[in-house]
Length: 441
Image 1 (tube, rainbow, N blue to C red):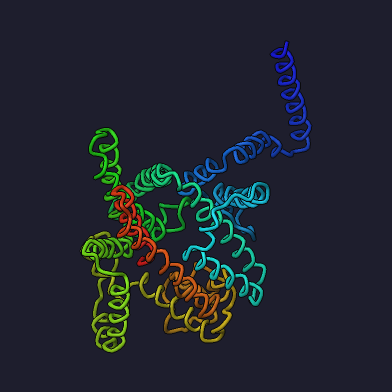
Image 2: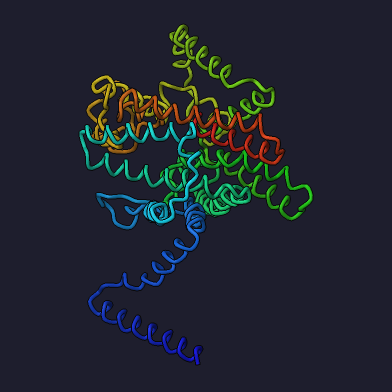
């Protein structure tokens, strides 16, 4: 009897939904068809929000910007990742208000404190921004990324297996992007360095961010390829994906990615030698100081380098140091100079988070402009995660971001050296190396 009632209810709801669909379609409103998906999402999120988070991770490499579908739209989003993260933010706050269960140790962890300081300064500089609308959108976007990818993740990663799931759920769709990218590149020639810059679209803006993600997950792949000694199938899969990544990194023609990969290897040696992080920082500051002492001689030698970026591996490597005629390098220097000039004009509060793209044009000097510069200065950011915040949120914007980076690596170092679990120690090492490649890049 109960089963018959359930069937009746099911068919009644289905009939009403179909009828409702027909009415809305008659008025050219098709979005009602997504209602079951939305209901399923809300149900899954309430029952198990961690699954929604892992779904968002899977779709991150496959996300496409909204302006690909609606050109010129004033508000841009990565679909479906950012709406998922926005939903996670709302649900996370809702669940927190309902049950109040959250590990307070996380809130007072040094990394969390560094993140709070950075978020607070972004909020303050959004108020003082030259474009408050842009800055508050930037702040809101940063907020849902932090809540999903940090605070919720700290809860999910209590289960060690979720750490490995997280990495694989990013790597697998990234392999799909690699295959797509290199099939497109083969149509123009695998040695076509110019084509490598845009064949990554619509999943990545250009080959720079694509190369950064390849190298970032390169080291965790080494961990998987070396740890699965008993599981032959998983070891074979890990090695196969690792080789795919090796080929993809070369064919990305992203020089900064190649450089950061070598830097990651150098960091691996330092960690293995158990050199304390403060000595690494002191060495870094010393090298920077030495650069300023002999900068004229270094710049003079760099200016003599006329190697252009190309499909030839050796020439592409040599072109890293070409700061006179290589358009990619000179335009990057142009953006850095613009960021510094913007900072000098507004050193405390900056121009506002997310505003660099809209504000840097007047700060381009004629002798810095390149063949890829624009009159309106509307193509991209500062090409630096350090100078960007410096221009947008002033000196405290850059320092608060660098504080987050420092505390993350300090925590990683402590975990690596103090944990008694060999498994945790090894995966921590390769995650540190992966993060290091991004911040060096």
